[in-house]
Image (cartoon, rainbow, N blue to C red):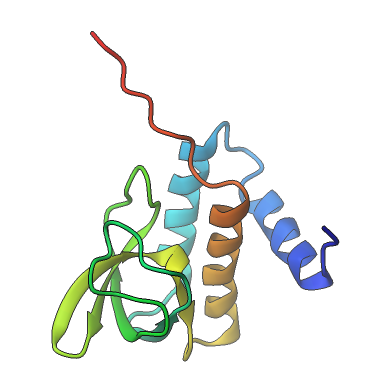
Length: 129
C-alpha cells in the first residue's frame, strides 16, 4: 500500500518520539505521557470504529465528549472516560476521531491512532507459575 504524505508525517513524528523505546509496552507508556502533555480535556469526538469489548454503549457514529485519560488496557491500549448523553463510559482512544481540538492536539491523537493501527500491542501471554 502506498503511503500518503500525511501518513509519512505520522511515521516521522512517531519515529522521533519512540526512538528509545525497547518494545511496544514502552512505546505505549511514552505515548500516554505524550498525550497527557498534549491534550486539553474535555473535547468532542466521534466514534469511527465498530464497537469493541470494553466500550459497551459506544457505537460507530456516536458523538461523545471525552473527559479524561484512564489507565491503559493490555488489549485495547489507551482508554478514555467519555460522556454520551447523560451516561458515562470507558472506550479505547483509537476508536475516537477528535472534533474540536486545536491542530497540534488533534495530531497527537492521530499519531496515537496511527501507532495503534500499525504497531499496536502484542498479544498478552499468560505464564504459568
